[in-house]
Amino acid sequence: DSGVTQTPKHLITATGQRVTLRCSPRSGDLSVYWYQQSLDQGLQFLIHYYNGEERAKGNILERFSAQQFPDLHSELNLSSLELGDSALYFCASSVAAANYGYTFGSGTRLTVV
Amino acid sequence: GENVEQHPSTLSVQEGDSAVIKCTYSDSASNYFPWYKQELGKGPQLIIDIRSNVGEKKDQRIAVTLNKTAKHFSLHITETQPEDSAVYFCAASAYSGGSNYKLTFGKGTLLTVNP
Image (cartoon, rainbow over all chains, first blue to last red; front, side):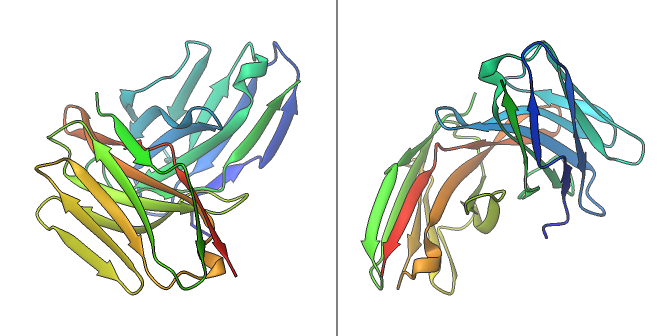
């Protein structure tokens, strides 16, 4: 157990739907990062939150949004889902927003049918 | 932005042999380079990291070397064991604005250790 909790582990939904992925960071970590992992694109950075504030955006689609709550857990919202959104979504946390290694959760496998 | 290239994409070795995975990065300002191991069905796990003020770091059978001039770094695994079989990712820490950094990952190397 890495200390980073992601729920649900698996999610199957239909095209056009909206889902919410949840992440609880490791105790004491203020930064939360979201990554999308697919076979062809590898680990792609989506967004970074630090202590409730958005700090950086990567290759995140406009249909996707995220937030970090006062208790530091984070949610990634995916809407108007397409088949191509099927992927593993990882949350990672770290102590700060600087150069530290991340601790990853075990991921949410999203399948859009 | 930062770009990280990783080679090879697949690597097969015999148990007991050494394995080497190489990465190059593009942003000369990057100064933190972690390596992750991902087993099937799990999230990536940090196995070793190196900062730009050192050229080499070892942890038992794993070592990482860094050549800042050439902008490349490598993972060396000696005396490989079947449980080393996994996907390995290199990453480089890239500045993302303000006081923030984010990790940019290579595409991964599938290492298979044959008994």
